[in-house]
Image 1 (cartoon, one colour):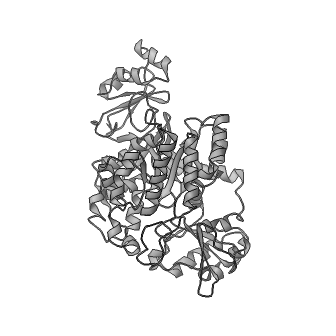
Image 2 (cartoon, rainbow, N blue to C red):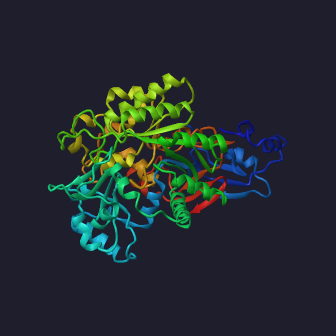
Image 3 (cartoon, one colour):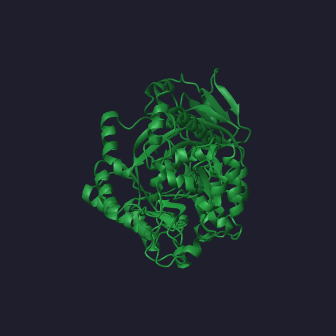
Length: 552
């Protein structure tokens, strides 16, 4: 049981409070009693938790009771379940905001639905305004990619650039193609593909770095629009028990907007900003001048990309796609350039996360990380491979040997599981979304969403990791069921492991005295609730920095 002595030892940064506690003069600000408090993985549930200022001060019935004073607010949890705040390690912040406020095509099950939804939306939009958002999924209507011809008639007055759900493809209408200057004579950029019809004309689909051709002509948001969207994202996150977000965009827009918001006060949700790997020198200079931020908005992270996505046929594999002979995927940037950037940025002491989906992409990045370690010497790096989706089984141990974190998204598994075998065949499925195998190999596995590619809701992620039932209902016993994990393992991946990912394992991710008071009060026990109904467990309250930021 965690008691007052543990609190005194753990407070560290709050010496005045610790001294007062030793003198017996500190009372709790808030005591939450009669609950089920999940302290951390493998620790028995406690019945109470108490806070002083923005820290946890006591855990356990007797410890909390001993610190209740005349001004302590006592809250009866009535059996509610308490966990550390959910730390979300992979979000595309402004794309997620766009998904909340703009068009959502995820429900389009036929080409006719697709056009109708876009047409209805366009009819309500001011002429000339760009239509973004998207989240369309061509697998819902058999796999045929949409074209500009599907939507031109229903969007005559608005340029359209709507994203596939994985964010690796955009569909443009003819007006958007014209504004971007893309025609039959436009060459494919390095790391990207302009999809063309049999006559060589652009169909409207842009893959990976080809998206840059249109994104550079889409008007930027105003500062007021950015702040409004950040606040929408923040409230959505808090409603789901998410208390910290790591942004993984390939630009500085989120970074600058978050710093601007922080200048106005607390941001309600904590953030860690990752900026493009190619800009490592700019980040190095910023840190030299201003440090790495504070507990509300931090930076020091870089994100690179080794390949594209499975759904777009751009994930990099050793062998050809089963349904696309001759295609082995693409490298987002030349691999030699990526290697050079990784070694240089690591030498500058920066925190690296690299997107890798295909088996070759994962091996290439592991090799680059190994070379960086050899060249730059030992230190506490915490290299991250984002997604780590398709790994050769012989590479599992390499993650562990190099100390590379696998930052994975359980919801992607139950989504891709509908059609992955068609793309890469049965053999390469062994090592696909290998949650359990990686954990058994001793790898640190963190869970997240990649929002808006998948829902931000951690309940859906835990449910997906536990059941692995694909969205089409075709795998009721679980897709690749040997890769299932327990609910507690999944919850640890969303809390304790993700705190480690962000170098915060000594202040967040567990509910112990001395840690920051970030926690969630749920209306059901996530560990014992029927797995197929986990998404129904309500969020009652979300507490960040000791303050209630959301009430359900």
